[in-house]
Image 1: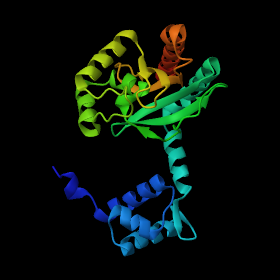
Image 2: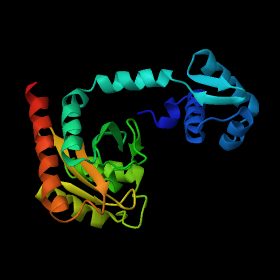
Image 3: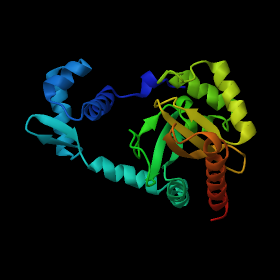
Image 4: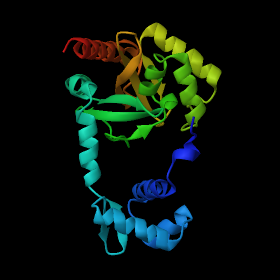
Length: 254
């Protein structure tokens, strides 16, 4: 079997590294890109010119930025996913019922990808957005999914992505995470106690297929000052699990 090294194309990888760096920096010039990526300026320039000619980046003065054509690709990808179409009304209803931030997450390449978000009238503003990728171990959504994946898949993800600490409460030990995942399976939902963003609590429930394997997860997130007591332990979990159940039924029979 061919290895990754055997089949990858260096020039294509350079193009993607440039695009990722443009996104990370929110725009950059040729010299900065070349320095950051440790490539010749001529190489950075040639890739940027090619990307601009094909309308994937735009140029303002000497600064290049990722172009809007990627939005079309993202919307195309999201709209072809059945779970997005089925879950969006439930996510919006969760936001309205709780007044908080509601989310839908799926897994791709061992990372969680936010497919949609809805804001209630009291929702806090956080850094998440549709399309954002996050590690699974440090979010309620991700843990809800990990708890309902085959053991070998969980191991593959953790081996590849690791258990990077994001806050003081992030779980970074595999044994501890496995205990957490077992508890999630027992009670039916996951709790994120500020494990990615300090001060933000999240209640998430998995959306599973007919084999009880996670295909996504839905959640409600809010500040720890509001997500406590009965609201944290009963009210929001019941709403989130009910939404997940409705999504599962509609995924199966629609």
